Image (cartoon, rainbow, N blue to C red):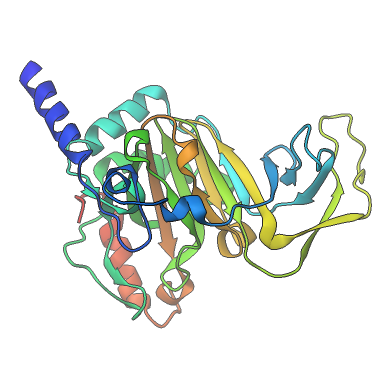
Length: 306
């Protein structure tokens, strides 16, 4: 056991020195080897900050800010807390750590369980994909117990490992919609974090008086909008507790880019993101046969990282 622990420590120390960054993306490892401020420090920051409220489904202005008491609807977010137990969490991460993690961009490490995809050319191939890992089967079955996920059939799982020592982060982005379907489902393990949502659309967001909460709140208590902010200057923070499941659909999936800022990684964080197929690969779609093959492999739960 002592030898195994020592070997794991050596592997971890070695991986902390490996950088997978490309282009303008950086992490603490490569920043130590560069001169001048890294791009993430000089890029413009959002001016107006709101907090997502899971009780109302609105983005609300923080206390003691210029927007306290103001809010706007933020549809497409479902947060299921305590989706797995602490014991299940520990076992999932232990099994993930038995397979190698590949260096990825911005200080992340990754494990992919899915087909090899060229999104630019819209081509894919199985390339050794044998399914999702066996330890995810119980998690996927549990998803089906919830109304929002009762017909969810994941065809891909991507594990991402974040570490404050590596300065891990992920830039604002929208997931592909050619291959991946309506719902993005992420299981947050080991530590809490914040998912930051932003939108580059022109125009303004209309603000309302923040809706009342609780059983005594009157119906229809939200008045007419009487304030606005430039959409491109807004960031919405979604607090994601440890062991919770975050589901993004609709506008939160297709219109608002999601990101994890470096400052929000306080300890090791592992995220398992599950994706379903887009309509082109479902029954009736142009590539339904390929979709059937992918689903059959994915749901065998016999996979290893590809």
